[in-house]
Length: 172
Image: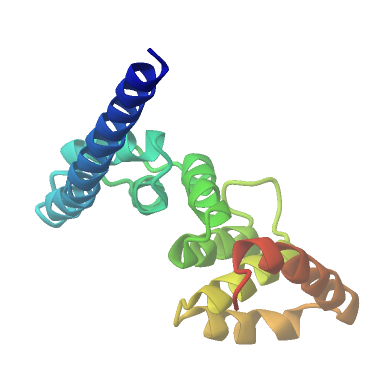
């Protein structure tokens, strides 16, 4: 009896692992294709359909989709232009390590768009994280921002960069 039970449990476990492997294999290309489809729709100026696809992906935590929704609100593509909503979508993607969104949120902090007032410390932090993440425009943004900051602001910003960097980019 024990041997039969063990065999059944092993077979059941193996079957579950096989099903999970197939589902994961099938799911990955579909997600990539959906994001590519959303980008293609944006290129075709079909922004409402693109946003609908991005929202599905964003609900599952896709940072690329969140950043694209931020772009749509920032520029008013298929939605009413809304700095506050653009800021929030950029922030979601930024917290997941999306360098483009990090530059976007840095710019919003720098200019005070979508928030109460400019915050140069946080602008510096996000530009620096974006540069660490590989955004090619972020070093230029840092170079333009830094002379407008006091030494105290730069020191505070560097503390924040160091705090975020260790968990956002642990291997850089």
